[in-house]
Image (cartoon, rainbow, N blue to C red; front, side, top):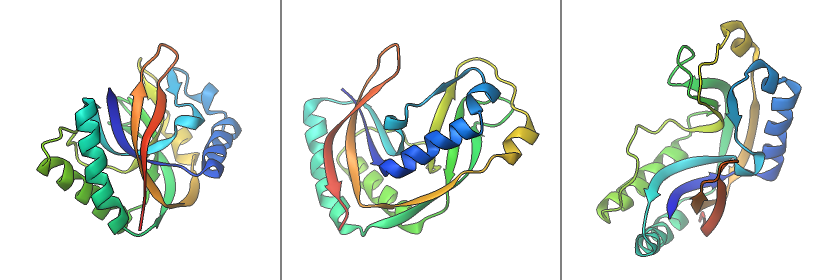
Length: 182
């Protein structure tokens, strides 16, 4: 099964992001973006890819040992941007302000996964929320992006191990396990 470790967003924040996309008319401005469904908005801490049921059980044990040791913390969302850049956009995102507690949590999760020989995507961590993915070339006008700004915040109280099933009309995410922060 295809899995990842993530922070789910508060339902009010999901609604605010959906409203931001509609109010700013982003569907029309950025044609060619495959938008993430609001129910699927999350912040990925570790993408595991294909793992076995036994590996999922190991990940559950790792997270049970790590997550309760961390206190709840606030995530502040701000700005929008593109990976890898505006000239060659592949992902449209909302940024996450630097949060030492988030970085420590990510570090501890990575360490636990590494020590248990669980493979995961080891790209440098750049906290963000993906709004959409871009398959074909899309022209991104600097003046359009610079006028966009989304700000919101929420209290992180738990981390989840998620399963992702891919379908032609988009992925369906299922929470396998949830772990409360201490």
